Length: 133
Image 1 (spheres, helix red, strand yellow):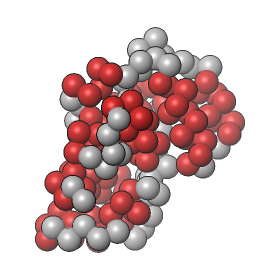
Image 2 (cartoon, helix red, strand yellow):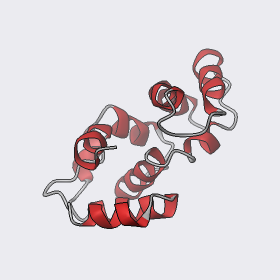
Image 3 (cartoon, one colour):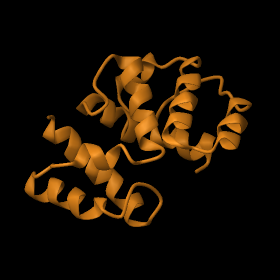
Image 4 (cartoon, rainbow, N blue to C red):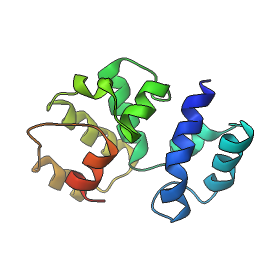
């Protein structure tokens, strides 16, 4: 287990989770305990319930050949790093497939298929600006 990676994920996932945007209501206390005390039990389970974050981590893991909970993958999504340069426009389809598997409504995934970007950067800002939720 890469504790620093999980702590990074918790730091950035806690604010939207606390506002009810993603994840389960069981996550905030676990995230705080991971960041403050270094006790990161069941953090992966909580992060896998994030309807947006988990598909991005899966997509980045596929692109980079790394574990989805590795520091480089989590850092790429939340902050950006050189791993993002490995992404190609064709990887956008993989993200949409991962959205569908995660439970994003089919109608929304289909709508996104018509909005294929010329450049795909699997980063949180891409989610905000291109996907819009």
